[in-house]
Image (cartoon, rainbow, N blue to C red; front, side):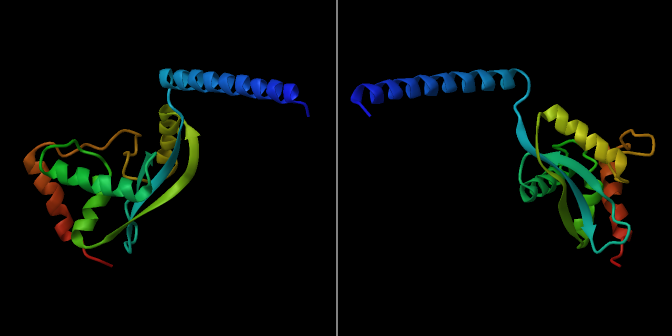
Length: 162
């Protein structure tokens, strides 16, 4: 190859590389305006070693261990009246009685927007019998007052391991 041909090829490659950078920026800008596409997953939390364990279905873009840790942290904050009620607590309270929790993926590697991930989560919540919803597809009533929270905790004192 001649030097002129190499120079021409290099200039074309640089031009293509620059066009690719511009397209990437446009793509990221579009996704920022809509929703950033992330690698999400749908998971379930159950109580290990408990027959008829309650099931919580959730969605995340984090690792599953980290997500379970966040659920634990949120439950502590809720009991200290610094965080909102989340239906996962109905499964999480079993850990306080010595049970172990299990978090397993239902669906992995979902490349979608947050809204799409939420729709997929809704599908599995409706499909599975879980504590996320009551029979009518609405959220269960949540303990709001301190007395309700104490009752929430005391209800697990009657639980016995199988």
